[in-house]
Length: 298
Length: 316
Image (spheres, rainbow over the protein chains, first blue to last red):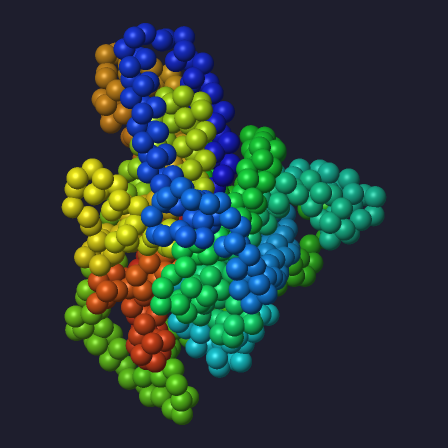
């Protein structure tokens, strides 16, 4: 998920707007109308399914089609806000994704340090391997991972799933953390060494505080990705008590012959909320992180 | 999704500049000990156990007749699983669906729509632009299961689309039954376009305005400027983006599973779903891992090409 590009895009577009204003002519205005029309049409196509989500969640009589609720009500939410349906799966999701994010972050920062600060013949091949792994389809290895988890008795364990989820996010996190760390000047660290700090102290007290916006990006990015992941917990976790929200929503609605659309929409809304909110927070943060990373690297 | 940031760095790097590696390491003031690689251990350990391990296990069990139930025993069966795959009509069908899904939803749908949006956004009104990026990115942030449910409701027989169609006097559709692969492709375009849009917006922001303006001054029209000037300058971003969205689309599972479960009558069973069904619903772990290995090889090949496009850019 690459949001800092959005930041750049926006700055750039502001420039264009100013520019084209200076060149305004009637021909240009007509072109502009067509452009805005096309953009609004796309937005409308995108909004139609989303509108259903927002309206049906507050309509107990909701069907699969977009309709204005005859009576707005919170009954759908009341019906699903029980321990089994919502609270436990949400908590499981939080534990799984939060735990995995933490593990990824710690491992990625530790791995990034030698990759950023030392010279070695192995560094380039190692980084290339990491980058290669970011492209591997994780879906493809779920079948063998299941086999492996059964053999080593990690199947249906939260801890095993956390470690696996953390590993799937690790290659890209190492890559990002290394790039963010490259942008922290080594001189600052050297000053800390002359004051008697060890390398790890230098990392903790000097480097990490300077790269935390970058780390926040990696953390949120990892969390959002894992929060939406359906296949990994679907395969690795079996008992209802362990399932996170991504699978919980599926098993809950698969047990009825007839879909209760209002409740489905309400649940979808609740489950999407953390990802959407974190993303909004992330894109605010990104302005700073981006200029930091980009500014030092020039 | 996971490979996105590399693409963005790729996309926003000005042409001809060194990338990927970062700055050269500074001369080290403290003594270098053999322990300096120690911080790599946790990461390498996890990747070794949970990523390389399963891949090796996959390669090995693809050549056995391992079953899911009863670990009583299994035999080395050589290439049987692969010959079975290549002679099976179901496998051939799932390859076709995978290719269709990838080409229609990623290479054509997400890529073209993403580029079109990125280009239009440069000229659009600020409010319209904010609205479009909010909904497009909103669709992207939605968990895939939710996107699946939204689209099954939208495309269902009693869904919004049919209300609109009958309202306009058209015959109602039932894409989820007649051509489910088209239905899941539409949903995947809806969900994934934001990625291409962001990559292309970033890439376009690196295109020097002067060059496009010069083309306009020389009398080139909008299309001519786009085809002869703008797009060629985005060559590398386009290559990188195509590679990444192909990889992402190859591994889509949750979206298709919640919408159609691969049905009806396997008409939307792409390779990941086929491998899953064989391994878990028909308990043929050996055959399932053989299918997984084939998917992994295809993904690995694409990933290598992706690396190559990145590295080609490194040599100025």
